[in-house]
Image 1 (cartoon, rainbow, N blue to C red):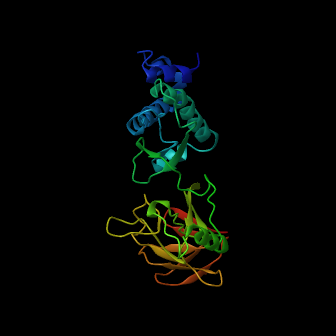
Image 2 (cartoon, one colour; image 1 turned 90 degrees about the vertical axis):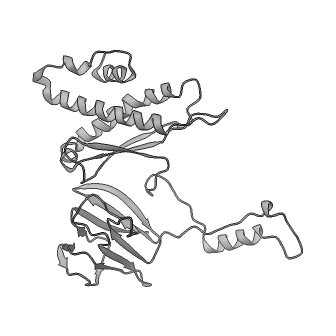
Image 3 (cartoon, rainbow, N blue to C red; image 1 turned 180 degrees about the vertical axis):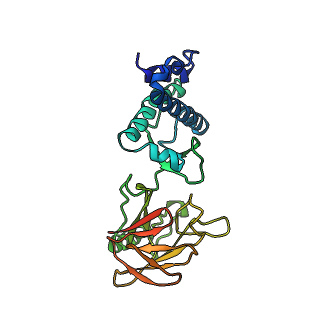
Length: 282
């Protein structure tokens, strides 16, 4: 029996002995890896149990994605093949557990993903798990938006004529989805955190707060101001960046002073504290 099978049985309560206790001191690095996997797997399972629900007569639903946030120090230790191994190990340990937790009912969520990200507010050895019911990143799903002509035709077809009265419940209301102008890649310490779609000509960037709302939040670094900068796309398709925060901000390696409005090209880096942003045109 492999160590991962032993860990899964231990998490499931099938055995009482800690399988890691039998690992010798000469294999200490491996044991540290497995101890961390068990800690994360248990926390993901608790989140899974807390979030899962079964409607009357229906299948059991669980979140399809779990984001595990690590500290900066731990994130640096879990890179490359080691990182992929941790993600695959978590998936292996938890996939069967999800089916067991659903009991006799069918599991509606056919598959799920475990992703590692960074939270600079965490200390070494700490982590937190966030369930995601629907992925907000454009890379996971294809979003189809209606063209203006198609939207207009659909609206006319769904609107009753002046001479015909229809009950309100039978009228189909068609509303336009915000059109994605471009997207912004968010990187931190060499790891891509997210790809954020932008639907407005001008957006605000920063860590935000309860009293300050930003369009593109970058959290986890105290050097990032609540409202740190603005990014604007003009009518000609050019991009303009204006720092608002107190800490230094760089564009393509050059420090930009506060309130200085500079043009940014898609291949240039925008550096804000430990974050790097890149524009991705459509």
